[in-house]
Image (cartoon, rainbow, N blue to C red; front, side, top):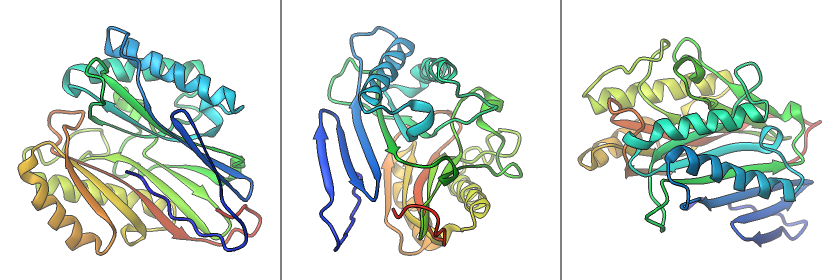
Length: 278
C-alpha cells in the first residue's frame, strides 16, 4: 500500500476515484495514482505489456494527459520475470518510441519486479503516477554516471531517478536500483550484503545529484530474491538509513545475478518561491 498523508488546514482536499485511478487535487496539481492495469487476454508478455500501456494511454487521454509529459513513475509487476521480462522491456521500448521517449529526450522512473495480480492469466500488472499541472522546470531526471550507466546502455528504458521540485521541497522518486557499476555490470555476485551496500551507494550518488543524501529518504522498499535474506537486508537498511520506513519483501529481481533491489522516495528541503506548493 502507498499512502500519502496530506493535511491542509486552509481547504478541503479534492479527491475522486474513477475506475482504477485515484486523483487528489491541491494547489493546481492533480496527482493521479493508477493501479492494477492488466490485459490477460493477450497471449505473450510483449502483447500483454503493449495492451496494458495502451489501456493506460487511453485513461490518460480522458484526462487530457500524456505519457511523455505527465507520467513520473511506473511499477511493472511481472509474473515469472526470468521468462517474461524481455518481452516487457521490448514492448515498453516500442511504446515509448511511439510517444517520443528516447535516449535523447527522457524516460520514466520505474521498478520492474516479480509480482502477480488476482487474475492468474495476467503476466504483467502496471501501476503508475501521473501529475497534471507540473511545469517543465519542476521536473529533473537524475543520473550518476560515475556509479551507474544510463539504462539504455543495456537495452532498457527507464530513468534512474526523477526529482520533482515544489516551492518548499523536492520529491525524488528513486527507481529500482541494484548492485550495478558504471559499465552496467553486476557486481558482488552471490553476496547479498555487498550487493545491498552497492545499491545504497548508487542511490546516494543519485540523491547527491539532486542536492540530498540517504538521510533524506522518506521510505525504502527492498526486494530480495531469497526470502531467507529478508531479515539481514532489513537490519542492514535500518543500521545504515536510520528511522525511515522500511519494507523488505521477497520478489525476484529482473537479472538472475541480482539478489536485492531497492527503491524509494526522498523528500529534500528546498526554496523555490516561483514554483507551486506540493
